[in-house]
Image 1: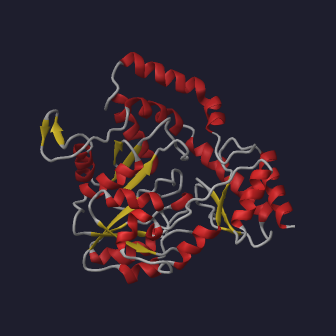
Image 2 (image 1 turned 30 degrees about the vertical axis):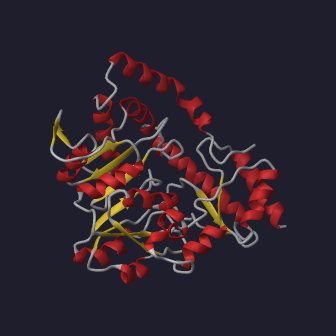
Length: 358
């Protein structure tokens, strides 16, 4: 079986480094907001190219607390793409009102449609670098810059995409295990060039405390675990190489599948980091079943646009309001991609898809 992800292969390549990091952390005896978190924040901020970073428990929390740190909450409108399922939950928990906008063929926010949904209550826009595809941040900044609307980049799937996370007021990252840079559990991060925002996130991540037991506002707990930070520091050293391999795998798929059937490439940007390799075909469901029968994994990211998810029916949208997002949800298919995927496995996936269409 060729899985869509295989984290066990990655582990085997760095297990000695991970074991060393685990042992050092255990011997140190500090497991919450210790030296590893502090060092990883500095190292990741340097990797992204920003001044500050604050570790959190998840990428969803990065969105929620990031918006709160920017002063956005009840009564404020936040615009996000209609196809990015996870993003909506982080925004909703901030208390802000969600407004949706459709996407282009590369599954990222369409700047032309963004103009139509901004209102006087819009306080933030969240372009999502979905699948590692870079959103058109430059065009979005031109639209919102003179309106004093903050830009929050959802870069949860874009570790290694150039500029992702550093052009907005804040960038939000997830270290969910299957991400390009994944923890061995849940973890997240916000990055920013604004010290006051980073400081506020650090307050919000632990009971609203400025000092231990000195809370200045009500907040919960969302701390990056010290052990996860230690393991992520190890993995960060390998990230550039892993992303380069992902690009090589993507190039192999594109070369092998170009012109086959009705396939279109949703991920086809040389500057992307290819967290996922996503194709589009009207035969999606049948092709997925065929691949499964031939020992090849695949998945759909994501099968339902936000406005059609039961949790968000209250937003008042209806089927047909976001035609491209809806079409993508019916036609997209993610193929196996991870750094340890072999060349022979890539050829096997390509051969199976060619055989299906022929």
